[in-house]
Length: 203
Image (cartoon, helix red, strand yellow):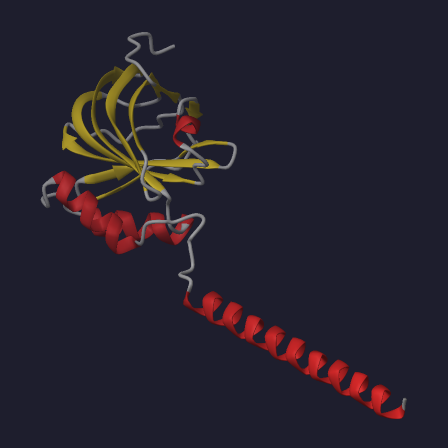
């Protein structure tokens, strides 16, 4: 009987050792897989170098002051997760309108066609036909761009041949950078309405 008990005890001990070994191998494999698995960025963003390269190519590399404007915007807001490149035309004497269209490009991959229109107000004399490169911050998805973005009063600035101002709705911030003949730097305290289709009514 004693021999039977000892035999049973040895079998139990052997089973426990085998189980511990299997668990150890499983944990080691899981750890190795976690180390090998690439880290996926949940909110990819553009670096300052990427934005400057894209904007420089878009503006044709002739926009004086572009590097300084991009650096200032990054210093104030960090890295954007999307941008819009397009063209717009406008004209105003105190009160006017601005129209444009372009393509929304996100760092995550999706793109979308976008139009914008809205009144511009302030001492904003003259007219322009300008290329526009807009940095987009905190955009959760492409559909979120289609809404009205009020201009941030006092945010406009001008360096060399490039002007920029801020627009904001909630957490989403837009920073249009413009270059072109007749570029205007005014109060621009109106808003821009971003839509899926062209709308000729700016109000």
